[in-house]
Length: 238
Image (cartoon, rainbow, N blue to C red; front, side, top):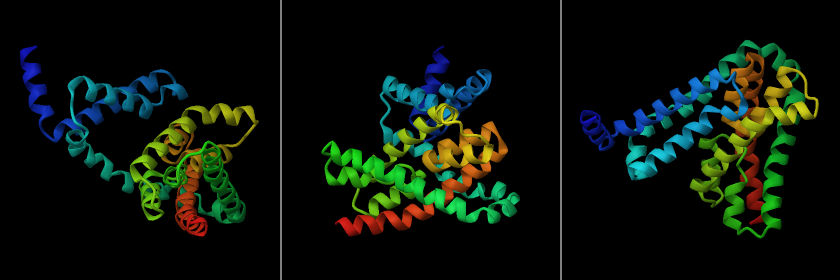
């Protein structure tokens, strides 16, 4: 036991702490997720976040020290998003055949996701900087934070809103789609990717390859459309 305490004390003072803690929490949560037959409530990202928060609180580890190691995983977020292009390439003929429908769905989905959040926030009296930070909540984190910064929002708050939106969609999306009678893996995957970005896409990939491919398409389209339209709309209302 004394050896373990000494090892943990050493590890917590190095960048390896954040990397080891993140990987360990996710591997453990993924094992539980698989054991529970991929139940949405057992989402490994959700429980990894919970475990890491508790670990940082119990060990009194400052977030900057944790992120010094976790940033290596954060860096991989960009390449992971780009890698989603491969399943899309395998289905390029289907995508080209339905490109108009997909573009329309992406634009309407983006307007619904962004507009509903901003309108609800405005009705509740949120200050302008919070509304600007909230607007890109349905877009993948790296792009959303860049959008927030460009429209004078708070990127750190945007990251939190993106996290919450993604987790809600990844956990509750299947129930909502079942309730409205949505059928077909392409439809379900596109809906998850459009409103729950990376979290929804990860869930879709786990459930079915077809759903994962269309979720990745929706994620990319939302990032592209949102990065163009949100700053333009924000400038119009400035």
